[in-house]
Image (cartoon, rainbow, N blue to C red; front, top):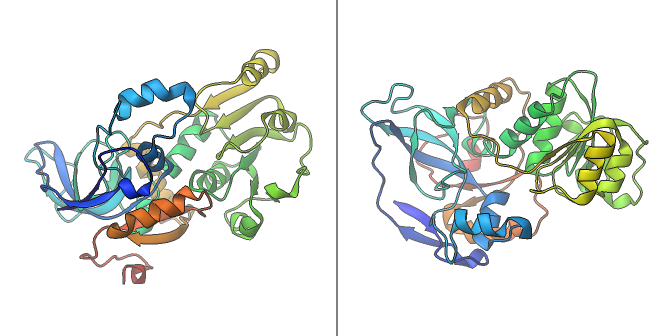
Length: 337
């Protein structure tokens, strides 16, 4: 099978297309023919080893001290089950699925074996493979943090960085959970973010944002570009501050938690569960979760895809088409032409 591998950390050019042995499913595994995957922030960080200083040592142990432990990147996918292990009960050959693989990566390839009881779910028929592949990481991250914060009807939420993958999902999921949502993003994305359900959408480049003191029950920081001081001014006393990119609390955060009772939720990998994907799949099937594909690349264009995401201006998600063998039953099958 064809796969994208990397043997050292560095720029996008370290990614190379290689022929590798096709995997064989074990007794509780399913073999998935990958139709589409994505370029996520996790892929970028693992490829370039750009992680916060505070987590350099654990990151080295997890990813590889001198060179990558896992040669194939890629953390999410959509595809077709081609074969199953002898004891698999949940899936059968021919099932169309989407799945997360952040723990072990491996989706920058034509095939992958995953545990049947892992984060794998049936793909909604109403969306394309590219769209389905872009749900398991960004949407699952947003869902995990919003559920931990117990977002509910009557609350007011501000999402900072609302035009990226996690941020755009956070807007929609918070609305789905009943909250009133305002958003901050770049000026060219204002109307699109508003179409996701945000009430008020603000341009972060406008300088001092017109946000009232104590206006929000929860602030969701998706890109780590807001001022924590401003966020504490906008947040209600005892409110919740979420930052999905910052792994450790600053002194300001610890002080806000101790003095004001602010709940602080920081970056951690959202648990990979099939239940989360089932939930998100149902939202997508019902038209309550929109997936934005900014650009699509072929597998052999992976270097260009990483260069684009490295630029830091993607809108929503960047997809990678791995196989064209299966006609996508979704409404935008022409995107595979």
